[in-house]
Length: 210
Ligand code: 5GP
Image (cartoon, rainbow, N blue to C red; front, side):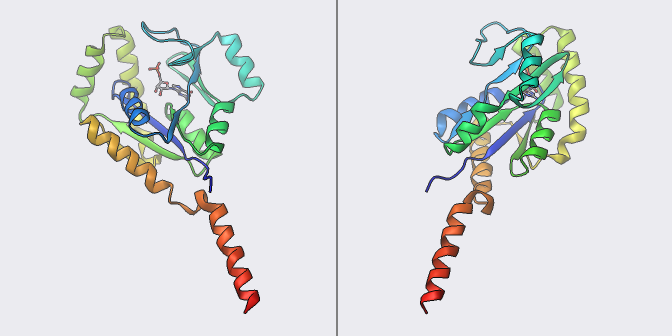
């Protein structure tokens, strides 16, 4: 029986390695689909339209909001980011577990609208380690790094609202842990409504025949 996929929201401070984790989850297991967000920020070197993000203008973004084409959207460090609705709904129907890699405001909106979604926050082993990774990445200016770290100061207050945290100290271990969290969530009755209702029907038939 086709089972509806789980909606998974993954957040984390900039530089915690969420992107790499998501790529590994997608390559190690075939049950996942990663949503590609829309953003008004400029592409970084190596990023491609339609792969990392759909890069759009502010006007295009606002039009999409008006059309109801986004599940959620938020402003992060002066740029808009949002999750396109169609892809997510289609993949969930197909039974894929859909991952949204989004920041906290958006994550909490998703939880409100989809109470059975799972919110996971990825943390670095320590703040000095995070700073080292951000500087080492070399894709942002010191000013942008500072703004992203100050955003992390705000985000850390909201972590209690998430369902799970994982510490990205070891990539392999972290991928397995994420997959096991998601697999457990899939055992919730919400994801087995059809099966439960079939058993109820069969039970009713059996009782009638007695
Ligand atoms: P970056 O500019 O580093 O790619 O992303 C900045 C932040 O925006 C990250 O925390 C990322 O998870 C978040 N983000 C990416 N896409 C979306 C989205 O569709 N909605 C929301 N709310 N946040 C997003």
